[in-house]
Figure: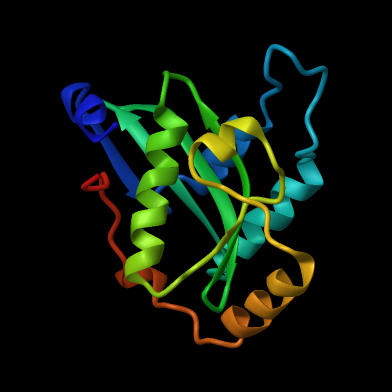
Length: 157
């Protein structure tokens, strides 16, 4: 994926255009009638972003936003909310870059919330509820990283 992204001239950014990533994620996919991301939810998440609790990863092909994701971070726990791709593999590149960033920042889990074939193909797995709650308790009690000092890039692998 890294080679594919580099050959295409893609670059990855962190928190550069949160509101636009949310808008793109809210656009219904061809197989959907609507979206769960309402205007009220968008406003709430943008407020969380301003409070440095919600974050986005953007994938750019030149000046075009071609993929991305957003989620909420509390302590060292990240809750993935939604992702989108306008080009093949762009959301996978965003997720891989996020995973690499979170690993270096001391995160051990991303709550994907949905068990999908797509996420499983990227390494997601279900864990028992008791174990999940223990992880959430431990990770949310840790201090949050300084998101402003974090840098994101295409992953090495």
